Length: 165
Image (cartoon, rainbow, N blue to C red; front, side, top):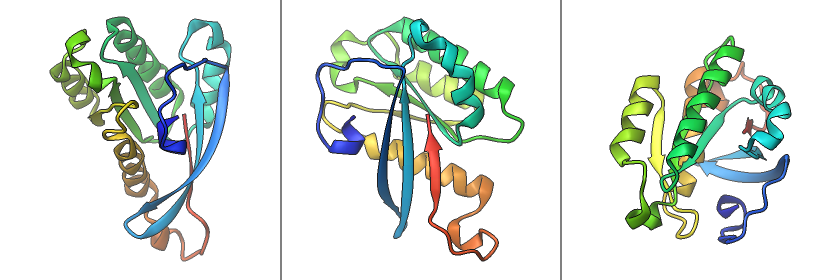
């Protein structure tokens, strides 16, 4: 995962889940992120509802090269919204921006869908690292908008934490 190690992994072997932690400095405040990278394949669908219920923020990632993946994240979004009773941070992410010539999903299609859902949208490249950090900054901003920034959290001094799926 580019965000965790600052390296590109060319062969991605999907598993049911991989957990990562990283501290992200956001507006000068260290934010402890707990990231759960889940497989989007049908093979691992039995765990998805649990992830949706427990997740505090979601990055819905599709490949701009694969139209089917764009359709799949639309179902994921519907499933998340149907299970959540409170507003939840979500960012729609079009990945593989470096493969523009192989694009099957237009930038405008992603942007329009995000506008329809009233969520943030970003296109990224795990290969080049372009806009990868933006995903997590956007999610933290949304969390702060919903739950309040750390200084506003009931005056308690606690390490900010978020779980992302």
